[in-house]
Length: 303
Image (cartoon, rainbow, N blue to C red; front, side, top):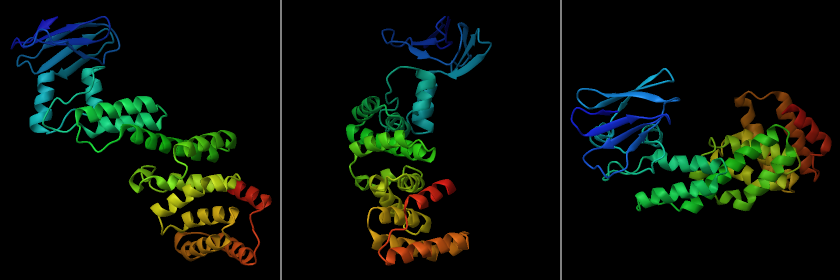
């Protein structure tokens, strides 16, 4: 246990691997809990100017940390921001996030932490995180439930694309159904939200893989989102073209394959790949569908 030289702080080490920091100017306030050690904390000491706190532990480390006073000073006066979510977790542990600089907005990483929860399928936890953000800053243009559902959808989209790529079609179909329960039409997503998935790449992967495994109707809206995000990408047009053909939109499929054929020579695609698209266009122009099970199996083996 140690008092700071300016008598403002009292620090104590504990067997629970934490350091507790009391603000002696407000003795009735709960202590700040500093985490980070992996074993019992057996020693604490302040620097002569009270700005630093050192702690020694049975984990054979010494941690040097700012006092909360200095954290607040740096954040509010020098950096002009509130603590990030990572900083808050590091220095304040499980305390509820708050604005240490009341005149400044909450750090964007606090909202992003809610989005990460939603992407991981922890929707209720994400809603609670967003509600806390709105309570701290009522000016935020954020609907907690809508935000959580949109980012949960993005998590399901990424998961489904990955499952299809791995050949786990049965599970992919389940997660795709869950995604459509959140958004019957993926095009309902705002472009900014849709672009969170590495721009068009994940959407295109879902489009490409879904129609290879006979689920073109369920992924056609993902194809549309991919094209909206990258309309000049002939490879993405190619993915949508096949999905269109498999869902009966032959005219749309022809237009997409023609776009790919015009785009391919400048993007290192072989003559064989281009010739195959020419043959598909010919079959479609004659009212046929080139994508029978044999062709789908060939494409699956090539992907």
